[in-house]
Amino acid sequence: MENGNRLRVVLDTNVVFEGLTKRQGACGIIIDAWLAGLIRVYVSDALVYEYADVLSRKLSAKRWERAKIALATLLQNAQFVALHYTWRPSSPDPADDKVIDCATNVNAIIVTSNLRDFRKAEKELGVSVITPLQLVQLLAA
Image (cartoon, rainbow, N blue to C red; front, side, top):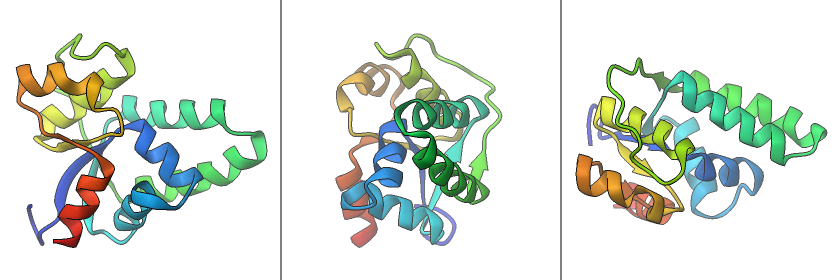
């Protein structure tokens, strides 16, 4: 925890997508915590583009328009990171390297529903990786 007990996190795209589209469960709680300033969310330009790309491709045009507004609101409450170092490849999924780069540059926890793709980075780079449910449990503690 840091300044005001806010956890430093980087959210994988799957967490943002589920939180914005389903609005229930652990990912929805994380989006609400982000909006309320209970967590400090870090993003890079590359990660923001990834969020927008996935949402725009997977949602209908009408749903993407609503999600775009919500995403813009969330990003106003995000800390933008200038990437000074990259470690590639650190994941079998190149999109996950954007999450890893952001987290390693600010020493933040990665929150993802897909732990498998982050095992190498966790082992070799020492990044902390947790599930959305684990983050909700940390916030509740």
